[in-house]
Image 1 (spheres, rainbow, N blue to C red):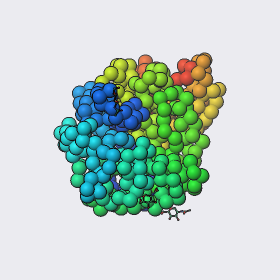
Image 2 (spheres, rainbow, N blue to C red; image 1 turned 60 degrees about the horizontal axis):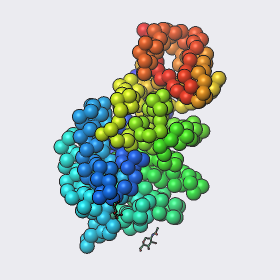
Image 3 (cartoon, helix red, strand yellow; image 1 turned 90 degrees about the vertical axis):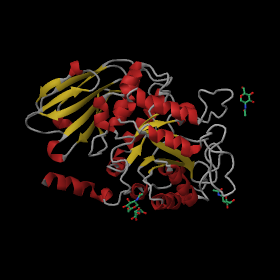
Length: 409
Ligand SMILES: *[C@@H]1O[C@H](CO)[C@@H](O)[C@H](O)[C@H]1NC(C)=O
Ligand SMILES: *[C@@H]1O[C@H](CO)[C@@H](O)[C@H](O)[C@H]1NC(C)=O
Ligand SMILES: *[C@@H]1O[C@H](CO)[C@@H](O)[C@H](O)[C@H]1NC(C)=O
Ligand SMILES: *[C@@H]1O[C@H](CO)[C@@H](O)[C@H](O)[C@H]1NC(C)=O
């Protein structure tokens, strides 16, 4: 027991004041419209892909019928461009009536009937990033409206709030209004990313007191370069970001683009594995109606999801860079039965590389040694290696090896 007490003390500096709404005890999993469907509002021209209730209902159906819900994906999240262009006579937001004929309440009922949860989007400032009405002057009313509709998660963006210094006040106000509704609503904040962009110091203690998840860095795009630049940011900032992550609070490197147009299967494995090591939200932005089985299998990989969803919620770190291979390590589970997620990422896009390491170098030192299970290929499981025994790991160009490391009995 003493070991868990030590762990609590170590995590206590943030844990004690973290946002207490009972949500995001592990990184949230679900689907978010933005990267794939953007602000496509012309349902005459593109009825299948426009931002409409039909799109969210169809994604909910796929989540349930194709195994995603069983794997843990539960949020169906609307992004920008759902609103009518004005507020109603009582100043309330409402959904565009042509694209959302059931209203958000009707959509929430449908999503809940499937055993899923609904996420919605607004912005701090007077307009959303795409110019729709936003919550700056109506935080309390909008929090109440979202709760009345049965919303379960809120992403609050902020590109049109040009005075980024006001965000340290505005986001915590929204946290209070959400809490006052009495409905637990997972709060996703874009605030630290805007402060970063404006060169304003980020107070992560304050962020963690007010947000369940938060964006630290720029929006992901459908490209491998974008994925790489995001990973690079998290590696460079890890000493700041790792201590603030924990149950109820997670850094958000943005959506999974697995199954979209740009990532190869190996690159898709790399994004999935890296997001699991980073204890990142797993919010897919793809078309679940047309995704091919090889990408679906990566999104449903149980071993990777088990690393992502580990109860201790400790964010992994890059621990070594050697022979063009970046090695990332994430501590899993309770302190007295520690297992690890271990990721080898070959950053050379053109050639296979090998690296020789032992577990002690990586930070695991149980004298009985370790067994390693390979998340993507069980034929590569390693039954036993001593803690100080050197082992050579070979990684394909631009790809990853992901292991769960268990102490030997
Ligand atoms: C509101 O905050 C209090 C105190 O932090 C917490 O106990 C409660 O669960 C919160 N309620 C909701 C609905 O978030
Ligand atoms: C939607 O697309 C159709 C067909 O391309 C076009 O005729 C129409 O003007 C568009 N509507 C709007 C509001 O842009
Ligand atoms: C939002 O609108 C209000 C009222 O029109 C105005 O006072 C305020 O300055 C605006 N805020 C921003 C960030 O533009
Ligand atoms: C950061 O926020 C915390 C919690 O609100 C506060 O106690 C602390 O003084 C802030 N730090 C700075 C440097 O402003």
